[in-house]
Image (cartoon, rainbow, N blue to C red; front, side, top):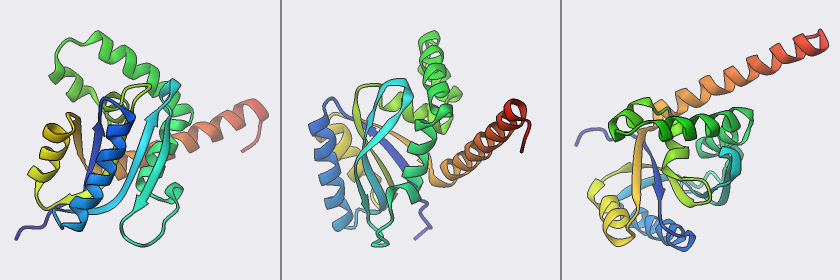
Length: 182
């Protein structure tokens, strides 16, 4: 059997209750070993591109705090000044493009997250290894009428790291410029 990589799945559904149903059903897929879940959260896309975690599960048993998880870091970046900027950029970029392919090619991890779970909606972010990809597709597309965006977990982790570095550099530069100190 070939090594299967971790994937970040961002899912969106018509209503908040369906997002919670997906959260529950994805736990069952983990118990049935159709996926190997690592972390999962129900998230709401609030105003200005901010995401709020409504529920969180660490499948690994490490009992991680959401802030220490990859999902928590993604939410943290989107909740900060960079997230506000991205929320504005995504709205204008998506609004100006007619072809779905153009949108897909223009998206970063952050933009893809905000585009997949539109403002005012609730979705699920799952980090998992999909033993049976069809199981997740059947659940999300057929049973719950949702949508899925999939991204490689390593790509997501690298983009989060780059965003954190850029945010730190911007804060240091602002302090130096405004207050004359490092």
